[in-house]
Image (cartoon, rainbow over all chains, first blue to last red; front, side, top):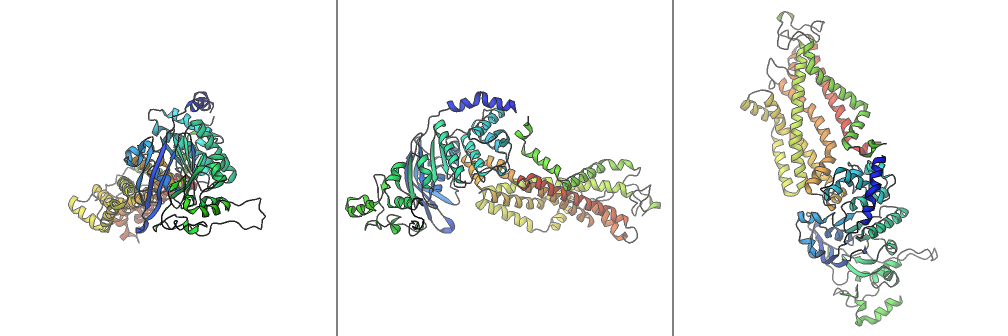
Length: 352
Length: 286
C-alpha cells in the first residue's frame, strides 16, 4: 500500500494541476433530431443553435421531455440509429463538423475531446468490472503508450481528485458496492481519464439527494476550473443554476426559447415560459396557505407539427402572431412580445 | 499492505466466491474424482475391458470383479471407467465446440441486430426444426458410427441453444446505460462487444456450458442405447445401460452401475453449474 500511495503522491498529482489544456469551442447550428417510434415521427430537437466558449459552464434547463438529453447525445452522435436520426444541423467543434464524421472518426472525439456523464451513474458503470479497472481501461484506451502501472496510479489520482473516500479500497470495488454519490464521483473520474476538453453532464445530480448534489456540483466546478475545460450542464432544476453556471439556455419543446447569463435570467426573465417556471418554484417566504403556482396545460405533443410558438397554448400573454409564425430569436429570446407591434402585451408582461 | 483488495481481478474473485459455495465444491470434487478415476482406475484391476470370461458371466460384485461382470464375463469395473472416459470426452468436447460456435454466432447476431440478426436467427430455427435423430442417422450413413460422428451430430444443432441464449442476453444488455457510457468514452464496437457485452454474459455462458455437458452425455448415452453410438468392444455408459436393461430382474448390478455413474455425473455438473453462475454474478453476492 505505501508503494502505490507513494507513487500517486510523488509525481502525478502535481502533473494534474499543470495540465491546463487548451480548451475547445463548440458551436451548434440548427440541430434537428427526429425519432421514429412505431412509424410515428417525433421531433425531439427542433432547430437548436448555441455555442460554448472555452472555460465556460453553460446550462441547458428545461422540463423533462423537452429534448435536452437527446440534444446532448446528438452532439456526439449517440442517438441509436434504429431509433432516431439527426435530420440536419452542424456541430462545430473547433471548426470541425462532428456530424459529418464517420463512426470511426467520431470515436476519436468521444471521450478524448468530449466527455460525458449521465444521470444514473450506477447503471452507467459496467457492473462486472471493478471501478479501478474501468478507469484504467478508459485511460489506456486513450493513452496507448502508457504502462499498466501508470494507468493504475493515474486512476488512483483521479479517484482521489473526485474525493472518493479511501480511493485505494474503492479501486477494487464493484459499482454495486458503492453509494449513488460515490458512483457519480467514479463516473466523473472515468470521464476525466481521457482528459476531455468539454464535459457534457446530463443531469448528473438528479438521482442524488440534496446534500450530495451540492458536493457533486462543487466538485464539477472545481475540476472545470482546475482542468480548464468547458462544461455543458443539463438539468431540469433551476435552483442548481445560480451557483454553478455562467450562462443558461432555456429549452422548451425541442427549441431554445431564451438564453441569458444566470443572474440576468433570475432577475429579468424575458420569456413568459422562463418567468412562469421561476414563479413555480415553491417559496418559503409566502404563507403556507397560498397556492403553488403552476403552468396550466401540458407541453405540446412533439409527434404533431407545431405552428408558431410552442408555448403559445399555455401563454398568458399570447399575441395574434404567436399561433401562426414561430418567433425569431431577437435579443437572445424567442418571443413575439419583443416585437414593437405588441407593445401593450409586453407592458402587461413586465408589470405582472 | 492489502494489495489483494487493490486489484483483485474479476476471475480470481469469482473463484474465491465459488470456493465458499459448499454444494458447488461437492460437485467440483465429484467431477475431479471422476476425471482422475477415469484415467487411473483401470490400472487397479488385472482385467481389461474387452477380456471375456465366459465361465464367469453375470457374476455379482465381488472381491475379484468389484462391479461384477456382464453377459460375456467382462469386468464391469474396467468398462465403467472406459465408459467414463468416452462419456466425459464426448460431453466436454461437444459442449466446448457448442460454446465457441454459439457465443460467436449469438454475440454477433445480438450485437448487429436488425435484419442480419433476424436472418441469422431464422437460419437457427430452420436448423433446429430438423429432427436430431434424422441428422444423426444421415451422418452415420455418411461417416459410419464412431466418436467423431457422435460429436459432430451433437454439435451440428447443439450450438443453437447457446447462440440463442447469448443473443438474447446481448440484446438485453446492449441498450443499457453502461454500454452507452462506454461508447461515450470512445470505446470501439469490438471493445464494447468483448469487454462489456460478452463479459456480462459470462455467467450465462458458464451455466449453459455446464448444463450442455450433461445434456450431451445424456444424448450420447441415448444414441448408444439405440445402438447408434460407440461400437463394441468399446463401451459408453449408454451402451452398458442398454445391455443391462434386459437383465434387470436377475442381474440388477449390470444396470445399476452405469445408471449410478450417469446420475452422479449429471448431479455434479448441475451443482457446479449453479455454483459457477452465482460466483460469476457479483450482484448475487451477499
